[in-house]
Length: 369
Image (cartoon, rainbow, N blue to C red):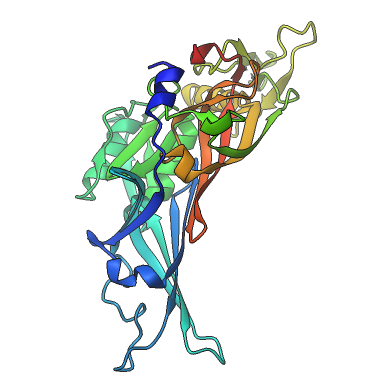
């Protein structure tokens, strides 16, 4: 779809926050709910905080903290409603309930903290053999096995094999173990709406509606700042140690993921000496060392970073991590497709704001057409 088409279809509806626990909207606590904040960061679990004010009822109980839904491990969802359109913001479980009773005040303050569904993988620490030299398994097979151990989770169809492992031992919780395996492959691991995602960043395909900067009445971006750090290395070099009097070999690894623009954000075409960093592996197989070096090179390729804030009602959608979004109105160099690195969603009486961080590994806005 063209950018013009996206603009024509952009909704202009007030943003409403819909909070539900165990599938039931908390309509009876709507007036007590002061703020909803959802923190989403790439490589970390999504976190949600609900802040209420609470008063006693005629029976001596408290409206919020005595509500039967305010219990750890209650399923919690947050949606943004724009007219007839509803989009998910958070799905997870209540993790903590904190109540403060200030002296001299008739009410209390209740803070409910929740974590996304990866919390289900963070309950029990075990020592378990996941792969052996007699029966080596790919990381995808290991992830599928772990997901099957939690009945409400399934493996996302886009998961990829990753490394093939010989001796592989899980020592700790499944969540910590899977993050380690994701790091070893240069992958992303996260749980969203019941699906376990395990694979490289998806840098092609569908995008979110565009972020519009200084676009007159269509503007939905309150502010944005862009930074291009050209001093980040362009490649990673691995030195193998010398053995038996033979000089060690040096291997070079460059980014191999898709470029979000017309020109890679590297200095290779500037007529300068190569800009490389060195990775000193502490051990592992050749495949594991190569995966670590490529992962480092890909992460260093995110030389363009942007931070800003959206008016949620004007944007009319929910910006989500691990997805692509066009940015228009920042010029031909910085305009184009970006990858969503972090979003802080905030619902208050003043409206819906989305504070975002984006990353990019190329320049040029050719993708916008």
